Length: 322
View 1: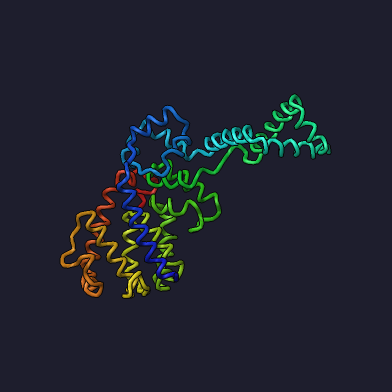
View 2: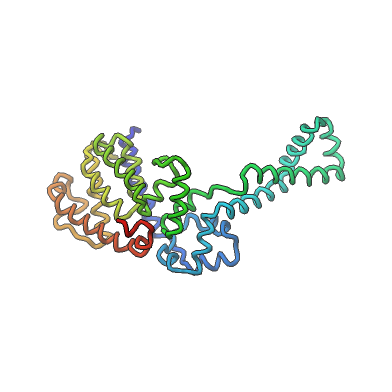
């Protein structure tokens, strides 16, 4: 299957997955708060990380916010992982055996392993020492910090607390990888970071210039359709210039921008924005005759998204400078 067919499949799969995410039950801020009161922060995270949140409700719940901020606390996550490591080695005789052998090798007493394993008293002594050595080595290796899960960063990019932005932006700056290869890049684009969006603007320009070849239409359209923001719609409009022709799962090849038009039309419908005489089942050649009307509707959609985003955007540290 060639790359162009993969693109069609990706768009179809993404649309279906998003529809399913919208249909699934949304967890409320009150439900999250109840969970945090009886569970550790990252226990809650592991339970709900793939659940759809009521992000605006979470944002406005001042009692919930300190708990959610723990998901960006590297020390908190380190302690959580450390507890799991302790539990793992305590319940894994094979790991304990390896640690005992490691200790014996350092003392040049490898041949003593069998006698220790066969002696319950000696084994308990070495077992406790092995667990202690393993845990101390783990602490020393990670220096009391753990990079938080990528999913925690993604969730916080939707929560969009100003504190979340500051933390993620600092990690991006410190990473020395202020490019699309960074785990922090797309979350910062989502939160409106001027620096990240400037880099993304350049990627879109390159994509249009190369007619969808670089950095690759699959990469860009996946990111933009996931972002679903005022900024994303402004970039999707630019993708109308991409005329790469590819074969969907039909005999009739179409330019990529035909799929962009249909994506926009579906989003217009979801936001009750009408474009006269243009429907998703209208032939693409006819749709393109109404590009001015489609672009005008897209501008209305951008304004709707901006209105929805304003409750968090106005609290961002960069907002007044825009």
